[in-house]
Length: 376
Ligand SMILES: *Cc1c(COP(=O)(O)O)cnc(C)c1O
Image (tube, rainbow, N blue to C red; front, side, top):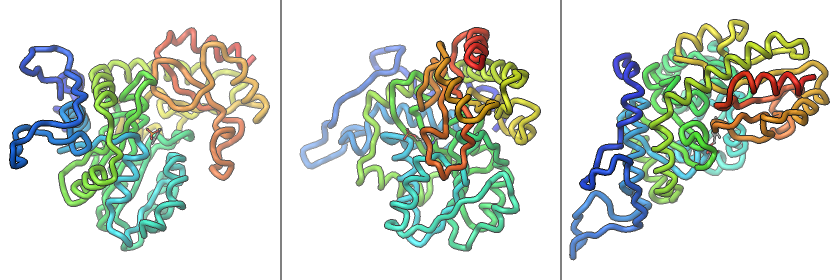
C-alpha cells in the first residue's frame, strides 16, 4: 500500500487518538478494571472487564493495525507473551520453521514448551532461500522470520519468503521489532502477521514493556490468539498501552533520527583501524544491503561491529565508553553498547569480538567521538 506508506507520519500521529466527549487532545488513559452492564448482563458499553478488552488498549490496537497496514492487532504484556500466544494458537501437530538466529528469548522457550504444546520446530538460515525450501515438512503452519536479526543484522528477503511459505500452506510471521513499521511493513510484502516487542522502539523511552501481533486479516488464527490472551491472561496494562500509543505518535521522526545517527556511526566505524567489520544493512558492504534497500525505507538504529584483538579488546572497548551505556534491550533515546557473547548463550555462535549497539538520539559526533576514544 504505497499510498498509506507515504502518509505514515499522519497515520501514526492520529490513529487511535480521536477526541472523546471531553475534547482532550492527548488520548485519555482509562484505568478502570470493570464497566457497567445491564441488570441481566446486557451489554451497555464496548467493554466489560479489563482482561477481555479496555478502551486504552483498543486505542493502541487501532494505531498498531493502522501503522502496520493490518486488519487488526492484539497487544500483550510483553513481546515474548505475544510470540508465545501465536505459537499456542497453532493446531497441535504443527511444525514451525524459525530463523537460526531467532531472538534468544524464543530460542530459550522453544525446547522447553513446544514439545508440551505438541509443536515440532526446526531452524534454518533464512538468508538462504533454497535451505528454507528444503526445511518445510508438509505439517509446517508457520514460518517465523526476524529482520534485521539480533545481533548479526542478517537481512531476509520477505517477499520471497512469503511466496515459499504460502506455497506449502504455511503463514509467514515477521518479528519486526528492530525496524518497526516506520521502516518495514512486512504485511505489504506478503507476510500474514507481524510481531513487535513494544518494549523497544514503539515505546521508545526505555520505560514500558509490551508486545503486539498485527494480522493482515482476521481469521481462525487471530481468533485463537485472542482466546489465548483472554483465557491465559498475558494482557497489557492500560498504562503500558497508553505509553506505547504515545510513543507511536512520534515513531517516524524518532526512527529517522535513529537511522541517521546509526548510519553516521557505522561509516565512522567502517574506516576505523581497530575495527574488523561493521554489520549495518545501510552500508554497501553489508551482504543484505540490496534487499534491505528494497524492502525498508531506512536502515534503523541497530548495528554490530567486530573489533581487532578478540574478546579482550571488545570488553576493553565496552569498559571505556563514557557516553554509551553498557546495557541490553534497545530502542530508547540513550545509546547502548553490549558485548553480545557475554550475555547470550555460548551455542548461539556470536563472535566474541562483537559489540552490539543501539544508537540513540544524541548528537552523532558525540557518539562517534566516544567510540573512537574507547577503541583507543
Ligand atoms: C526484546 C525482543 C523481543 C521480546 O520482547 P519482550 O518485550 O522483551 O518480551 C522479541 N523480539 C526481538 C527482536 C526483541 O528485540
